[in-house]
Image (cartoon, rainbow, N blue to C red; front, side):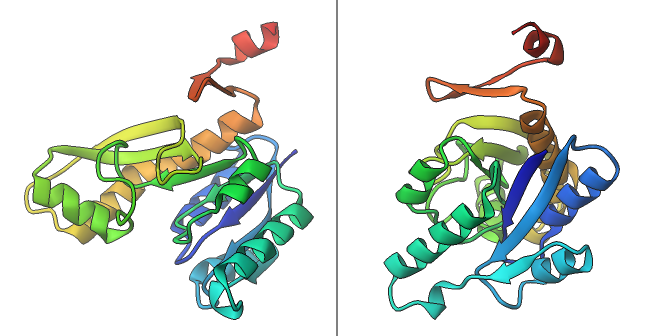
Length: 215
């Protein structure tokens, strides 16, 4: 059983996609054991509690320093003993010490086709505003492993989404979520749960089940 901790800052639509996929069998042998948010008002916490999943707020504002918050986050994650940590719209940077403590065990969903429109300052609607301002015809979403940089870790899955005439940042954001994020994030977790993902030399190698069975 893959034990997953989900970190989220807002409404938790990607969390809902994960939980729905687990319930219908789209993610194999996996449980979400804890949901953490930096925002006490995040609807994601309500989503989790309604499904009987422990849900807690761990806010940087409750600590005197960012270092104290990082220590508390690290301790809570260690207590939870996750096999995988999923950043599902988590707007707090993960410090290097946590990345090092959970090597290749943290994945993030980003609403663009990395390396486009990613890195510091690109989050939420800002990503889609930038895509529309640049006039791209194709955007999408990326699931990647988290390293010490910002959106720089090994890419696991990507899915393209067409930009339509008359799109606004909000309409594009919604389509990217529906057509890409809610599909590839559960798919990535399922592949990890089935042992079909390996990280080698800073790149992801996706295995098929026959290849894995032969090893």
